[in-house]
Amino acid sequence: MRSVRSLIAAFALLVAAKAAVAMPHFLAKQTDQSLSFTVTRNGGAIGYHNFVFRPRKGGVEVRVEADIRVSFLLIPFFVFEQQGVEIWESGRLVSMDYVTNDDGARHSVKAERAGSRLRVSVDGKPPTTHPEMLPGSLWYPPSPDTTMMLDPGDGSPTPLKVQALGEDTISVRGKPTRATRWLWDDGLRRELWYDADQTLVQVWIRGDDGSDIYYVLR
Image 1 (cartoon, rainbow, N blue to C red):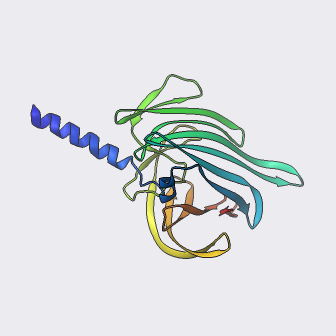
Image 2: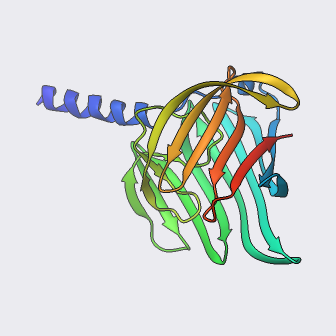
Image 3: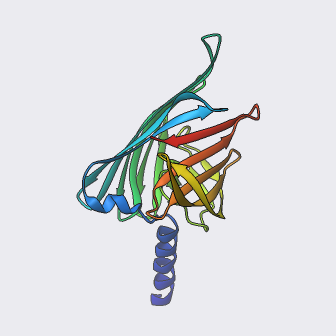
């Protein structure tokens, strides 16, 4: 019996380890921090995606806000709006609360960790329970063994491919910066760059129409 319990405990620790992240180094300052990105499409600004980090006992609160609009002759034909709050402790998600308008598809997603599980409620419906996983909010550096994420936009557990693509020198706030490029692929291919301090400094997404969408750090 003791060996069975030991195996169960070891498995729980393994799941938790895979659902933990290495926090960006700037969070060690224990002061409010922010990352603000201008979102561009084929070189023209179409919105913003911002993250605000506030220290709290044992972890950090992350506030997320995005507003992205693609228009033609001043008429919007794509709109993405999102507001969210994440609570983290020791590199693990404790809870999150998101409201999203993805071009007319509107969802409210709440999640809360319960041991090594995640209880997720979408649009006020009774919660469902899933293995602990990370939200696809992009601001944290990924782990190569991550295979699932929780989509903060609609609350669905989503298969995820994560792969390191090597190092690049890119321009960040007008300065050449060495950064590691990662692939996040959950059906929508994203490439993300994190600097030596594990800070997200750039995002690239291929639009459905073939356009190049970049997040440019302000």
